[in-house]
Length: 124
Image (cartoon, rainbow, N blue to C red; front, top):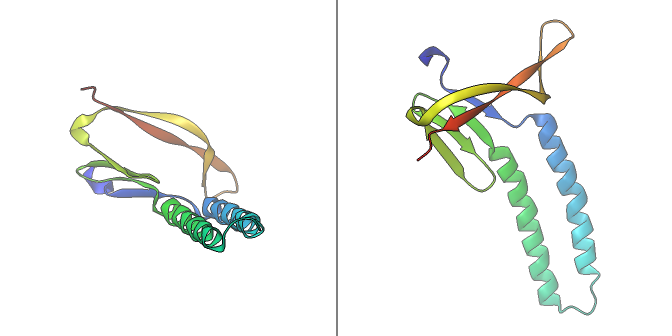
């Protein structure tokens, strides 16, 4: 097992393209709505614009950071809002389940579905 570790799984570039499209569509939509609010003071509009830009920037950076890695110490999952680490001693079972959205390319033109793994943590 140690010859195959460490391993890291990150978001694919096709999935990041979806994040870029969502941010690219969402940012102008929100900003135009805020900037067209004529009854709102300019400082409030500027503050909202800054907060919206910071949020969408954080969204892109956080999406790129999302990953799952396995090393000799255990499994680490980096999410949007934090990191969770699970030591190998705490893993009771890992089950493979089909993941319909994950594909791996073979040498032929066919693709196969890759399984997802879900570790079952020890109950305290």
